[in-house]
Image (cartoon, one colour):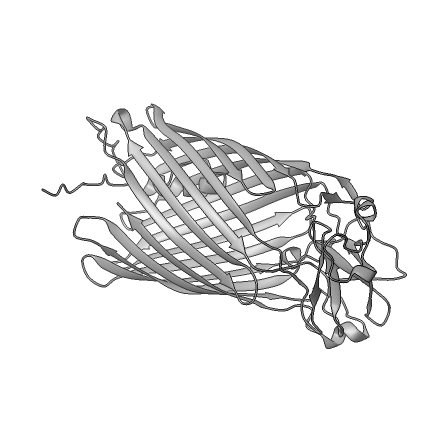
Length: 447
C-alpha cells in the first residue's frame, strides 16, 4: 500500500520576507504556513520530514568545473516549530587564472606548494592547473513562534575545505502586523574563517621564487629555504559580521513585494595567497611576478528589492540589488524569472540575470617598473570591472506520488574590461581580459 504524503502549504509572504536572509544564513528555506489576513492554524501533531535533493554541475570553458550535491531536510513540529538541516558537498577541479598577464612568449610559474612548476603558452591567460578542492558544508536552523506575531530563528554553519575552515552562527526575528500583510525582520550573523593554504601565506609583493623539489627544469630550480623566505606564516584568519533589515508587504491577492538593507563588516586576511601580478617593463614584457596584497578590512552595504506577481496563470519574479563597499566596488544585479504552466502538474521557467560591477580602487591588471609598488594591488579579475549575464530555462513537474522533479540548464558569460588601464606595447597585442563562458546544469527532486 502506497502512502501519499501531503505537504503543508507555505506562507508566501513570510517565505519571501525571510528569503533574503538566506544571504546571512539566518532562516530555513520555508516557513510556517499562514493565511494572508489571519494566523495559521497550529499543527495538532508533528509532520513527517520533507526533503529536497539537488545535483548541480558547473563548467567553465577550459577552466574550473564543479559538481555539487545538496540534501535539505525540514521537519515541522507541533506549535509550528521547524527544524531545517542542510548538507552540501562540492568537488572542484580544473584551472583558474593566477592573476599574471598574458605574454607574447611562454611563461613559467612556481606551483603554490613551491614544489614544481607549470607553463603558459604564448598569448594565453596564465592558468594554475593545480586548482582542486572538496568542500563539505552543514547548516542547521531552528525556527519557532515566540509570541503573537513574532517568529524567531537561530542556526549554526560549518564549512570545511582542504585548506579552509568556516564556522558561523546566526539569528533572525520577524514581526507580523497589519493583519499579517506586513512583516518586518532583522537578521544577524557572525563567521570566523581560518585559511591554511598549501605553501603558506606569502609576503605582500614578494617575488615568486623558483620551484624546488620535483622541478622539471632542475638546472633552474630553487631551494626550500628560498621559498620559505617569501612566506610570512602558515595560516591566517578573517571574521565577518552581517546585519540585514527586511520589510515585506502583501499588496493584494496577486502581488507581494520585499525590501532589504544589509551591512557587512569583514576583517582579517582578505588577500588571495594564490594570486600574483606581472611586473612588466615599459614595453609590456614581464620581468617578475609578485604576490598580491589587499586591505585587511572591507565594509559592504546593499539594497535589495523584489516583486512577485501572479497573473491568471503565469508568475513573474523580478529583483534588483545594488551593492557598494569601501573598496570602491559597486554592482547592479537584475534577476527575473517567469513561471509558465504547461499543464496542471508541469511548468517551464525562463530565467535571465544581468550583473555589472566596477573595479576595486586597488585593481591593477599589471604593475609597471620602475614605478613605485602601491600599498595594495590585485590583478584578480573578480574584483575588476566586468559585466555578466545568465540565461536559462527550468522545467518542473509533479510526480504521481506528489513529489517534485525539476531540471535546469543555463548559460553564463562574464566579460571583464580594462577599467581604464592602458596596456603598453606587448600587452596591447594579447587578450588581457579574456571572457569566461560556463554551462550550469541542475536536477532537483523533492520528496
